[in-house]
Every structure is written in C-alpha cells, then in structure tokens.
Amino acid sequence: MRNEHPNAVEVELYSQDRNHIWPGDNKVFYLDDGETKQIPLSCNEGEQICYGAWVSGDKGTYWGTGPDNGETCEDCCYTCTGGETEEINLIR
Image 1 (cartoon, rainbow, N blue to C red):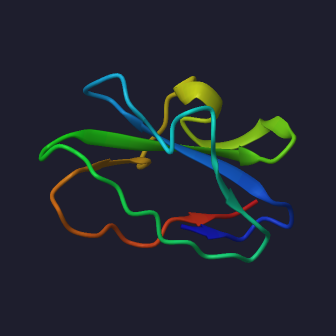
Image 2: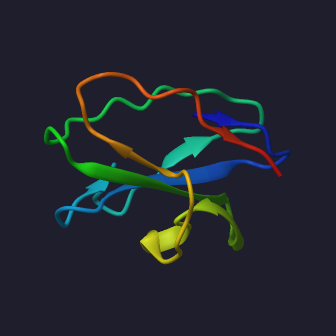
C-alpha cells in the first residue's frame, strides 16, 4: 500500500465474510506521506477483504470503505488466494 497523499493516513482491512479486522485491537496501519508498506495477512482461502483508509485525524477524507468499513466502494476489495495484490495507491 502506498500513501501518495500529502498527509499521513491510517488503514484497516475488513473481512466481508466474518467479523475480523486487521490489524485489530483498536490499532491501525499507519503510513506517513510518501511511505509504502507491505501488509501481510493471515486470511481464509476465498475470503473477501476490503480496505478502508483515511487521513490521520480526518475521517471525512477516506478511500475504500473508509473508517469502520462504513462506506461502499468500487475496486477496493480482494479475494484471499495466498498470493499478493497489486500495489494500492492512496492518492488525494
């Protein structure tokens, strides 16, 4: 995942098939501006996972399903197949 926004962003990944969030425990993945981070997951084969990202301190500026998996999205979900996804760019 690559943050191309000028501010830091926070990211969570949400299972659409069970009640599970990565990283969980009220934590988030944090990406500084310009930072690229690989986020490895343990997931169930065939599980649908969507990302939600938002500007740190501004949950009104978001990508994907946004904070708390609260929005709908196009092209922000992936199927767990044991491989890698392409790089996801968070652009303003």
